[in-house]
Image 1 (cartoon, rainbow, N blue to C red):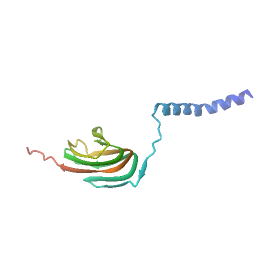
Image 2: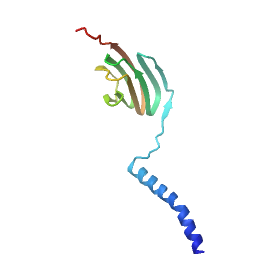
Image 3: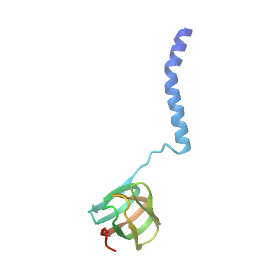
Length: 146
């Protein structure tokens, strides 16, 4: 009887350890299940623009763009927020370039130089209703000309 109990405990120990690790990860906030809500979420993406509209959006979405290295880029944004809040984060390959949270309609531009080819726009909605439009204008640097 004792050998049977020891065998049972030794077989169950790995599952208990995995369960404890999972519990501590969940408790510290590192293990979360994120639900994404997209109601009437429509987007259109091309090389030079991104348009998004939605009746309800809660969650995170990411869009990738490729530009020539060394290009000077102008990113023009127009955000419409009827409810909730929308967070936009513009990232290069390795680091954030620009980040902003919107709770009302707003538009503006930012200018930067592409250090890498790959860039991404992270769109995060918090029970928001509305949409956004992102347009790019870029000029390629000409080598040797001042």
